[in-house]
Image 1 (tube, one colour):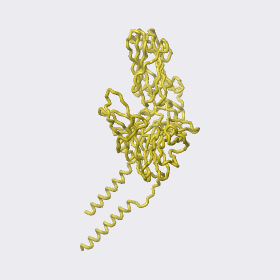
Image 2: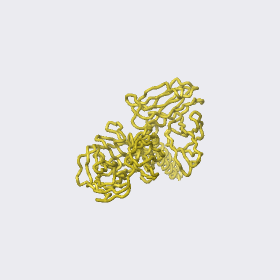
Image 3: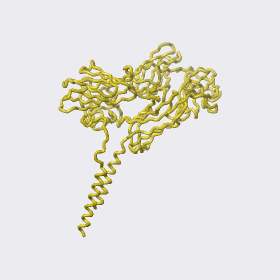
Image 4: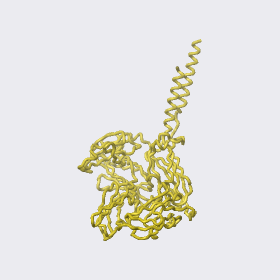
Length: 535
């Protein structure tokens, strides 16, 4: 019986010890091949590893994928393509190892690092990749035009061009009609692509498809395809998105449209943004502007009306990718009125060289500022009765702002004897689930609970819920016809500040295994004593 007890204790200790080793220690990141030409797609494999460098069997966190040069400097997002718009969430289908097949593309010549970050724990790993100049590729690699067929007569208002280019997956493609460019895009993951040409005039034409490298050098091309257009007057000619189809959040977008003189009105449709009636700037031109304030990738469609009020719809003619400019997240503050100070520290995304901390007791006049090289700062000589307002701005080597500042952090007076610890600037999203709206946010490392604040005007807010999980059901009907608005902010309550110790050193003061051995030895002596007494 005593032996069973000892074995049970050993089993429990082993299970606890093994469980503790499941924490994420880092990632295994590999690219294949590791030396490629510009625009050549490669495989990216990511494994979540525990402290023993074994694959984690229960990891389901979010990761961020970025590319830097060999010196650790960020490169422009437009110069590379990474899977899933930079982020990915592991799930059970991955079996804790995720392989992105032919999803990584770099369009610059240099030595680079592909970096993978854990969104919650901010642990990272990286793999190196060398990109070389793409010279002329073998002539045997051919682009085959599927439609239109040779000498085909097109009778519709638009024409679909489709091709196959199996050796140029995710390569840059240019479509030319009569030696004039009419479309440009990437070959998709199925090694083919198609585009709708809606403005070709009724006549005989020649079409061809070219594959390009970063320097716009043609590295492969199709045969010339003769075709003839016999259709009614085509209305839509060209849509131009400025400054680019891939922009940072809060960029002003200008959409310029070229059409037939028969077009009287034009409406631009953008997913999640809405409909934008366009202003007529000439007999064949329309234009409109809007702010790209929602980060995502959106389809753009178009509706045209002629003088006879005939409606013409053009679906998914362009895409708009909007990237977040947010760099500062999870601003933690500990207010200690006994010491008349506020300790600040925060997390950040992307490369930030310095941080500018603005603060004061006036919301509209943050008159005090300081530049710091690390993501922490202490405000001293704090007025215990005053509310403090703080904003953190990421800056470069010359102290010029490079990303959006943090949202305003409101630090209220601490009426308790002990220091209070809170986390602000938590990113919150709204989703629809089971006919209800929900606020959702990521887990905060420092949090022991979350407080949801609600207000109708920015200067009058109060807590509406205290939670230990990371979502909150909004008490509103998402399908209600009357439009009303409320504002919500989530703050996290930290553990006691005395528990948040920086620069921890692991020191083995009393090994657990010796306790177990001592217990076993004691049991052996006790058993021997019983045996001796029985004789």
